[in-house]
Length: 138
Image 1 (spheres, rainbow, N blue to C red):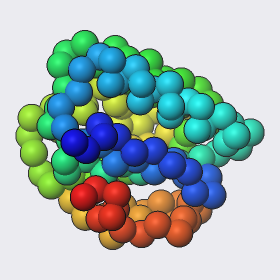
Image 2 (tube, rainbow, N blue to C red; image 1 turned 180 degrees about the horizontal axis):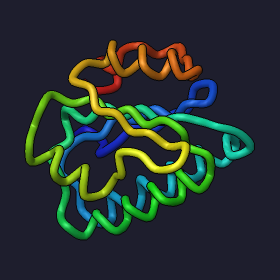
Image 3 (cartoon, helix red, strand yellow; image 1 turned 90 degrees about the vertical axis):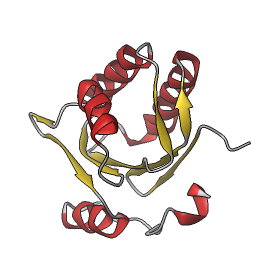
């Protein structure tokens, strides 16, 4: 069985691969692990990139957990968030309910390919060694 998520940090970027359907407990575990990983980055701007093709949505109870995580991140200098997934209206609907597109210095963008997402983050000054999620996603 695949884990519901993988999280790791490179330079000033938190990378994530999320899988399967989520319940509130999974969202809470993700939030706690994400915050722990972000702690060393909070002294200056940082970014996040997440591969969502294998994510199968979540129960409504995940939404306040993820909304709180997003607010925490923005308050703690998250500047760019890139989401990667093939166009999917229901997925977009749930993600948009949880994550704002932009506010203040923060901007979220959605890309259908990894290449475009990594390019955008590099253009914003956030580079990392990983340029392909395939190994983590499978």
